[in-house]
Length: 203
Image 1: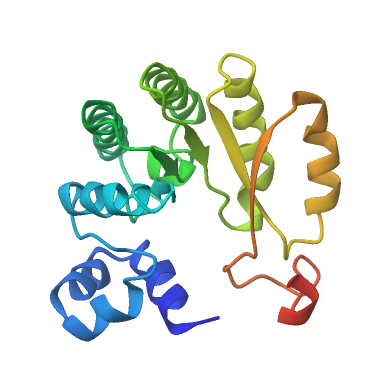
Image 2 (image 1 turned 90 degrees about the vertical axis):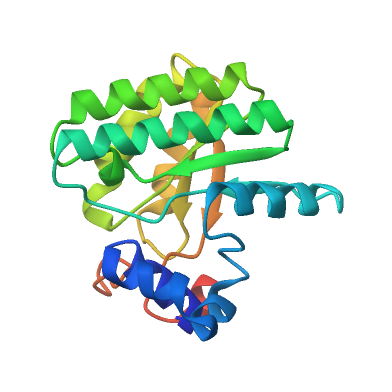
């Protein structure tokens, strides 16, 4: 795993590390390819610049595994503001959320309601909601909630990780939904029984 990817993964779980990334120039340079802005305004400016080159953007807030519903509600409200700014500025950008950042571990039903609200707002704004994939232990819950939201809204897609051995079967099972899929390599430290351990097998 590259240094930049490793830093971002760790920062998503550590508010302390996230602050260090934003405060240190060498860290900002290391992750600039993935994190061009330190706040929403900067991210939207970067998105607008990319749009002029015909490139779309996906915006996400670093973070996972919140510890209270208040915190999860704050994350939901942050993304609602992001969608509103995307609509107001007419930037061709989408949002991507991690379900544990919306409190999946605390209350799956509340997490689903937050996802439905985000998908509805994204669709109305001409944007799109991506549901990120996390560790393998969250795959079943993530796909279950994705299918529930997809039944109500077309403006939602899900991320699948190429290195997970189960992904081909998951993809085949989702095909009747005509889903939007974002396929990524996968960055979590998983057992070889669960994920392909060699980069060449994933590439």
